[in-house]
Length: 411
Image 1 (cartoon, rainbow, N blue to C red):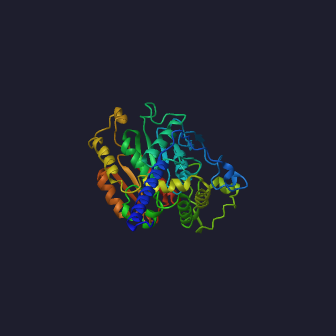
Image 2: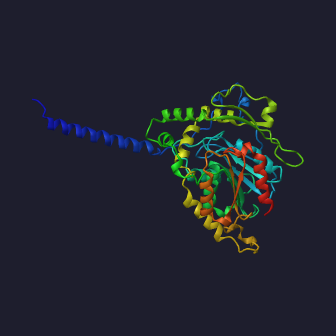
Image 3: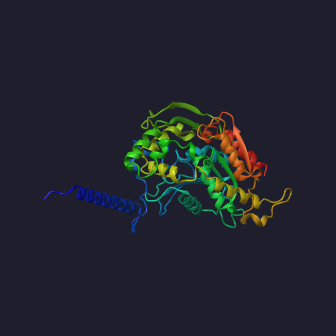
């Protein structure tokens, strides 16, 4: 008996509905964390391509002072902490989305030589930190990571005995967006805030259509997206080696930046000499190593671009600005020492923002106007480094350090 066309249409429609329903439930189930979820395992050092781990551009040990690995439900966190334990200024560093924390080592070592207690950490999915595989890399995750890193310290960073329970934050690129976001929620913990070519105020209209297709989940298979993004990132890498030396007498960072190569032809197998490894940071090879071999980097990168506070954060910055203004004492009035835990203003009086005149990632005109609008004219000090690009926090670490220290000394 022949099947009528009307019946065929009915069966086709029913099959389509069933398939769509099945797909929806499959996607929903894939996004639900299993009830017996366990923390991601720590990184397996044997997976990295080198004859020995010490030959890597960012060795796993004996490279930066004060190293520790902190075990957390979200994966391990690599933390470095050094400088005088009794320092009256503690400084937390937050790095960018492309590289681990070694890009901030020259600044950290320079401030430590001037008497600051400093802490650096590899954000989840970067450097020698692990990271979750079932959570978005958003403000909540990074705020939690900051508190877990602080809690792992052998000394108090936020307690009543921690020089008022406050610490300074220096954030670069993504780290600048994270620092402003953190300070907007916890202004009573922030002693001073330094934002280096920060994310946060870049308007979403500047995100390219390629990024909008590549980074969100659901458009393309995960493995294919990671392959495309990894290839795209490696083609953008510029290999640069920067000095990590400081003058023993003055604490000044010794500038010795050397451009070596550009593009994706970075030889990971050619490890640095012992002298080079001690006195220099190979930023380009570190980025290439991380992109190619860190098991969680590409996922964290894509998720961070989609979910972290790096674009269109004007409402959050306005909250920070209003809180700074509310707690700022009248001109000429000394700050009450008991106010340090009640949301008092920054020690230096203003957020210090340092931009690069040649930065091609951040539209300076928009960011400057939006920073003054959201934070308030009296709450932000904007400095522009001539010749500086988006890499100024490591490529021009000496003038950056000078600007930070000048702002802090005046307070």
